Length: 161
Image (cartoon, rainbow, N blue to C red; front, side):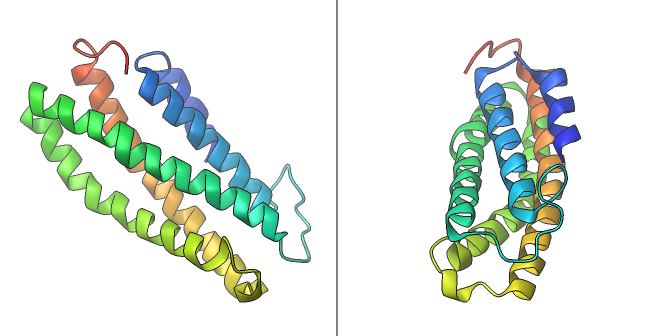
């Protein structure tokens, strides 16, 4: 996941402020996820559940990232596609339902775990966190397709956000 965001920052960095900010939020989300999941280089030998504060912090970063996508970047992509081409709009329309799957999963995770320490059970929490990680990886791939379309076809008319 982290390699993907670094590649995205190199490829599209500096093209649009909204994209730069969103990729920075993605990087924060990935780091927060890796800490919570105890993935290297963080504590890879976690034997207990993470603290409620750590879960809340992750959920806040997660919701912020989802919000930035839906209410800033996706809106920008849709408006640019409406002005500059139907092919891009078709791509966006085909990808949004796929992205929505991970949004639903992420919001469900947030609802289950952000405020409710007593509902966290090790097996279920770890399974759901892993499923969320896989969904986010797929989401990043779809989002990168949208960003690439915006970058390749629409940056001439949109220098900054």
